[in-house]
Image 1 (spheres, rainbow, N blue to C red):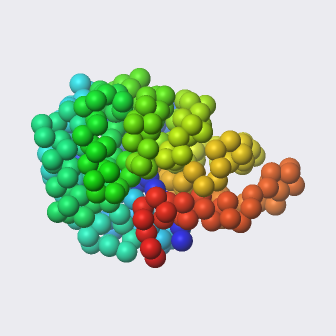
Image 2: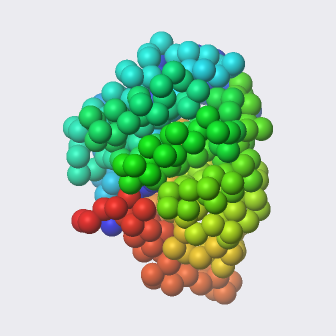
Image 3: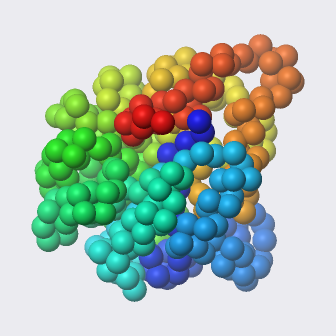
Length: 307
């Protein structure tokens, strides 16, 4: 079974326009493409029904994807989107309900919202969402006590929490997203599975250190796609990571659909399931159990899947 632990739905109304403007600006710079050409590609990311992601999953051989709702409404920038947080989470829950054997929805919440824990509890209980996504770039630290009722709610329902770590496109402030702030949380909630998105990004070493000191912390590989431009770099980094934290703590992820214009899902999956012989020739080896764990076995355990 192949499970993508980190995906999203795309729509101009789910996050404020200022984020999309920043995405286009940085994307154009990185790709060395005209700004308006990159902007014209945005509609290729739009889908709130789940139809597009399931189609791309079929092409890539992905069995299940975890949809992560995002709450940036209280951020100083980009500010409230057109849709309420209830409406945003409903979109994600509806997509998972439409494709119950393919999509799994995590509730997104800013813990500073009024009665946030009560609200996220409703998403979990009434809409059957299977986890919680916190995006601290909205302006809070993961170890702030305002987050603790959310972690307690996750424990109550027996679901994992996925936290953004690492850098983020403008206009968001990512100083809140260092993995070190999660260490205290992992110690205070040892029974709570915690997933650090993007393996810490620019704070990779911190993410590895936190994972090594708390057995309830996992790392996802979303955002690693640019490494595939230079395959030896990807596989050396992956081998080093597995030797550092154990393959049982690493989860396949893509951050779909934001990087599909760079590397599509099919190619990203094949990077792990069809490792080139040229890599093995450089004495970079991976055991079958390692790849099987990364690609789905570990995520299935964290999500409590029985099939």
